[in-house]
Image 1: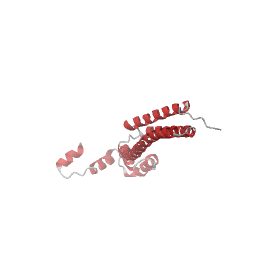
Image 2 (image 1 turned 90 degrees about the horizontal axis):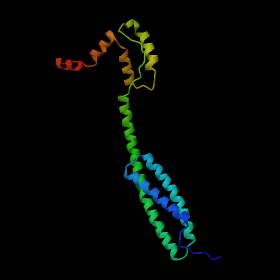
Image 3 (image 1 turned 135 degrees about the horizontal axis):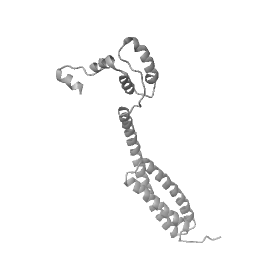
Image 4 (image 1 turned 30 degrees about the vertical axis):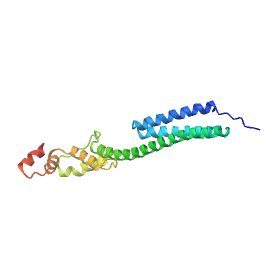
Length: 190
Protein backbone atom coordinates (compact mmCIF):
# COMPACT_ATOMS: atom_id res chain seq x y z
CA UNK A 1 0.00 0.00 0.00
CA UNK A 2 1.66 3.24 -1.11
CA UNK A 3 1.97 6.09 1.34
CA UNK A 4 0.25 9.36 0.51
CA UNK A 5 2.79 12.15 0.53
CA UNK A 6 1.46 15.31 2.11
CA UNK A 7 3.72 18.28 2.72
CA UNK A 8 1.00 20.07 4.70
CA UNK A 9 1.29 19.22 8.41
CA UNK A 10 -1.85 18.06 10.22
CA UNK A 11 -3.91 20.75 11.92
CA UNK A 12 -3.19 19.29 15.39
CA UNK A 13 0.57 19.52 14.80
CA UNK A 14 0.30 23.13 13.63
CA UNK A 15 -1.77 24.06 16.68
CA UNK A 16 0.56 22.31 19.12
CA UNK A 17 3.62 23.95 17.54
CA UNK A 18 1.99 27.35 18.04
CA UNK A 19 1.23 26.50 21.66
CA UNK A 20 4.76 25.21 22.13
CA UNK A 21 6.15 28.47 20.73
CA UNK A 22 3.89 30.40 23.10
CA UNK A 23 5.10 28.32 26.07
CA UNK A 24 8.74 28.98 25.12
CA UNK A 25 8.04 32.72 24.86
CA UNK A 26 6.42 32.70 28.31
CA UNK A 27 9.45 30.89 29.72
CA UNK A 28 11.76 33.38 28.02
CA UNK A 29 9.74 36.25 29.52
CA UNK A 30 9.95 34.77 33.03
CA UNK A 31 13.71 34.37 32.68
CA UNK A 32 14.13 37.90 31.35
CA UNK A 33 12.08 39.34 34.23
CA UNK A 34 14.01 37.38 36.89
CA UNK A 35 10.87 35.64 38.09
CA UNK A 36 10.98 33.39 41.14
CA UNK A 37 12.58 29.98 40.86
CA UNK A 38 9.21 28.34 41.42
CA UNK A 39 7.57 30.25 38.57
CA UNK A 40 10.40 29.43 36.16
CA UNK A 41 10.39 25.78 37.22
CA UNK A 42 6.62 25.45 36.73
CA UNK A 43 6.77 27.00 33.27
CA UNK A 44 9.77 24.84 32.33
CA UNK A 45 7.89 21.67 33.30
CA UNK A 46 4.87 22.73 31.22
CA UNK A 47 7.10 23.63 28.27
CA UNK A 48 8.92 20.29 28.45
CA UNK A 49 5.59 18.42 28.44
CA UNK A 50 4.46 20.40 25.42
CA UNK A 51 7.79 19.69 23.68
CA UNK A 52 7.32 15.93 24.13
CA UNK A 53 3.78 16.09 22.71
CA UNK A 54 4.87 18.09 19.67
CA UNK A 55 7.92 15.88 19.14
CA UNK A 56 5.74 12.74 18.94
CA UNK A 57 3.39 14.33 16.40
CA UNK A 58 6.32 15.72 14.44
CA UNK A 59 7.86 12.25 14.26
CA UNK A 60 4.58 10.79 12.96
CA UNK A 61 4.29 13.59 10.42
CA UNK A 62 7.87 13.12 9.18
CA UNK A 63 7.23 9.37 8.84
CA UNK A 64 4.35 10.13 6.49
CA UNK A 65 6.54 12.23 4.15
CA UNK A 66 8.74 11.26 1.22
CA UNK A 67 11.95 12.63 -0.25
CA UNK A 68 12.83 16.27 0.18
CA UNK A 69 9.70 16.96 2.27
CA UNK A 70 11.18 14.85 5.09
CA UNK A 71 14.39 16.90 5.10
CA UNK A 72 12.47 20.18 5.08
CA UNK A 73 10.25 19.08 7.98
CA UNK A 74 13.27 17.85 9.95
CA UNK A 75 15.16 21.12 9.39
CA UNK A 76 12.14 23.15 10.52
CA UNK A 77 11.75 21.05 13.67
CA UNK A 78 15.51 21.32 14.35
CA UNK A 79 15.09 25.11 14.67
CA UNK A 80 12.34 24.61 17.26
CA UNK A 81 14.55 22.14 19.18
CA UNK A 82 17.49 24.55 19.11
CA UNK A 83 15.36 27.35 20.57
CA UNK A 84 14.00 24.95 23.16
CA UNK A 85 17.50 23.86 24.25
CA UNK A 86 18.68 27.47 24.58
CA UNK A 87 15.76 28.55 26.76
CA UNK A 88 15.90 25.32 28.80
CA UNK A 89 19.57 25.85 29.63
CA UNK A 90 18.91 29.48 30.53
CA UNK A 91 15.97 28.55 32.76
CA UNK A 92 17.92 25.79 34.54
CA UNK A 93 20.87 28.13 35.08
CA UNK A 94 18.60 30.78 36.60
CA UNK A 95 16.88 28.17 38.74
CA UNK A 96 20.22 26.90 40.07
CA UNK A 97 21.37 30.42 40.84
CA UNK A 98 17.99 31.18 42.43
CA UNK A 99 18.17 28.15 44.70
CA UNK A 100 21.65 29.11 45.89
CA UNK A 101 20.51 32.70 46.41
CA UNK A 102 17.31 31.56 48.12
CA UNK A 103 19.25 29.30 50.47
CA UNK A 104 21.64 32.09 51.48
CA UNK A 105 18.83 34.63 51.85
CA UNK A 106 16.82 32.10 53.89
CA UNK A 107 19.77 31.68 56.26
CA UNK A 108 20.06 35.47 56.52
CA UNK A 109 16.32 35.78 57.18
CA UNK A 110 16.52 33.12 59.90
CA UNK A 111 19.41 34.95 61.56
CA UNK A 112 17.65 38.31 61.27
CA UNK A 113 14.43 36.72 62.45
CA UNK A 114 16.17 35.41 65.52
CA UNK A 115 17.50 38.89 66.29
CA UNK A 116 14.23 40.67 65.52
CA UNK A 117 11.84 38.13 66.95
CA UNK A 118 8.79 39.57 68.64
CA UNK A 119 8.35 37.59 71.80
CA UNK A 120 4.84 36.71 72.89
CA UNK A 121 3.59 38.38 76.03
CA UNK A 122 3.35 35.92 78.91
CA UNK A 123 2.38 36.40 82.54
CA UNK A 124 5.60 35.34 84.22
CA UNK A 125 6.72 35.21 87.83
CA UNK A 126 8.71 38.17 89.13
CA UNK A 127 11.94 37.99 91.11
CA UNK A 128 12.88 40.97 93.28
CA UNK A 129 16.23 39.71 94.51
CA UNK A 130 15.29 37.92 97.74
CA UNK A 131 17.48 34.79 97.75
CA UNK A 132 14.93 32.80 99.78
CA UNK A 133 12.38 33.18 96.95
CA UNK A 134 14.76 32.22 94.15
CA UNK A 135 14.05 28.45 94.00
CA UNK A 136 10.29 29.00 93.74
CA UNK A 137 10.82 31.68 91.10
CA UNK A 138 13.22 29.51 89.10
CA UNK A 139 10.88 26.49 89.13
CA UNK A 140 8.02 28.55 87.69
CA UNK A 141 10.31 30.31 85.19
CA UNK A 142 11.87 27.03 84.04
CA UNK A 143 8.44 25.48 83.47
CA UNK A 144 7.21 28.52 81.55
CA UNK A 145 10.26 29.50 79.52
CA UNK A 146 13.57 27.78 80.17
CA UNK A 147 12.46 24.24 79.24
CA UNK A 148 10.93 25.36 75.95
CA UNK A 149 13.32 24.04 73.32
CA UNK A 150 12.11 26.13 70.34
CA UNK A 151 13.19 29.33 72.09
CA UNK A 152 16.74 30.53 71.49
CA UNK A 153 19.00 31.25 74.44
CA UNK A 154 18.78 34.94 73.58
CA UNK A 155 14.97 34.83 73.81
CA UNK A 156 15.15 32.98 77.14
CA UNK A 157 17.50 35.62 78.56
CA UNK A 158 15.16 38.35 77.33
CA UNK A 159 12.27 36.73 79.17
CA UNK A 160 14.43 36.26 82.28
CA UNK A 161 15.44 39.91 82.31
CA UNK A 162 11.76 40.85 81.98
CA UNK A 163 11.03 38.86 85.15
CA UNK A 164 13.56 40.71 87.26
CA UNK A 165 12.62 43.70 89.37
CA UNK A 166 14.11 45.65 92.23
CA UNK A 167 17.54 44.58 93.48
CA UNK A 168 17.82 41.69 90.99
CA UNK A 169 17.29 44.00 88.01
CA UNK A 170 19.70 46.60 89.39
CA UNK A 171 22.35 43.90 89.92
CA UNK A 172 22.36 42.78 86.29
CA UNK A 173 21.90 46.29 84.90
CA UNK A 174 25.05 47.43 86.66
CA UNK A 175 26.99 44.44 85.33
CA UNK A 176 25.73 44.52 81.74
CA UNK A 177 27.94 47.49 80.86
CA UNK A 178 31.13 47.66 82.90
CA UNK A 179 31.92 51.36 83.25
CA UNK A 180 35.64 52.11 83.03
CA UNK A 181 35.43 55.87 82.89
CA UNK A 182 32.74 58.41 83.80
CA UNK A 183 32.07 59.03 80.09
CA UNK A 184 31.54 55.32 79.44
CA UNK A 185 29.31 55.08 82.52
CA UNK A 186 27.15 57.89 81.08
CA UNK A 187 26.96 56.16 77.67
CA UNK A 188 25.84 52.90 79.28
CA UNK A 189 22.79 54.62 80.77
CA UNK A 190 21.48 55.55 77.28
